[in-house]
Length: 180
Image (tube, rainbow, N blue to C red):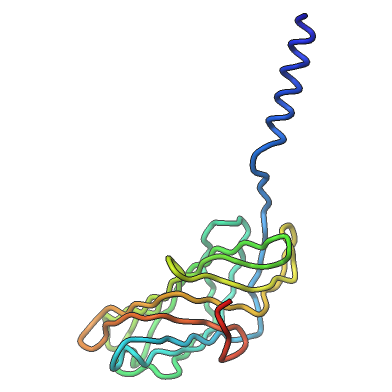
C-alpha cells in the first residue's frame, strides 16, 4: 500500500508541476538604423511645439523588466522656448516578444532642458498607451525590431509657459503611423 501511495504522490507532483505558467525569456533588440519620430498633440503655446526625432537601442533580456534606453541621437523638430539648448534625454523600455513575433510592452522617455533650466518633458505609455512592433526573432532568440509604434501620454513640467499635457505617437522609420 505504501508503494501505491508513493507512486500516487509522485504522479500528483508531476501533474501539478506541469501546470502553471511557463516562463520564457525573450530577447528583443531594438537596434535599428531608423529614426523614431515623436508627434505630440495637445498643450498650448510653447508646450505645443515639442515634436522630435530620436535614435535609441535597448535590449530586453528578461520579459517584463525595464531596461535603460541607449539614446544615440536626439533633435527637436520644433522646440519652442521651453528647450533652447543643451537638453538631456533618458528612458526605459520593457518589451515582450510573443510567439507570433509581435512585440508589446511599455516605454518611458524623458527630456530635461539645459537652457532654460527646469523644464522636463515625459512621454509614457502608462496607463493608456502601448508598444506595437514586429521582431525578426521569437520568444527565445534575439531579433531586430521593425514597424515600431509607441503611443501614450506626455506631460511637460517647468517654468512659465512650459507646462502642459497631451497625447503622443512615436513612429519608427517614418513620420506617420497609426495606433493599432
